[in-house]
Length: 177
Image (cartoon, rainbow, N blue to C red):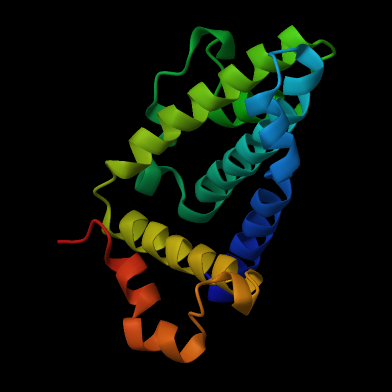
């Protein structure tokens, strides 16, 4: 797996996730205002964009690792996937658009359920190739996120301090024996 390709995938993922967060004002309005569909709609829109980025990453894992290393094709998917292969189910979910607030909530819940299923599965991988790939992706994403954060907003953890703390080595070793 070419490192430049992984860097590009993770930089794009981090960018999408940062853009999907919404604004602090939207989150405050949701917290303080009475519950209303118009108030909650932006939150579900941002949450779905975040879930979409995660589902895109799952498709990348499939393309990058191959079936033997990740075994995603062996998972029992929710009934609404209609017994389709996971890539078909994920792509259909990514292409689906909700026209109503209720439809948005339901679509978000299906995306979140699928992401949770894949996340639990990927946490239990025992293939050395898959574990190395996932560790590398985690480190590259952490670095892309760190680099996208202005210096005055990262607790004054500039490059020298980050290196001294071995920040990315720590990220890479999470879950390793």
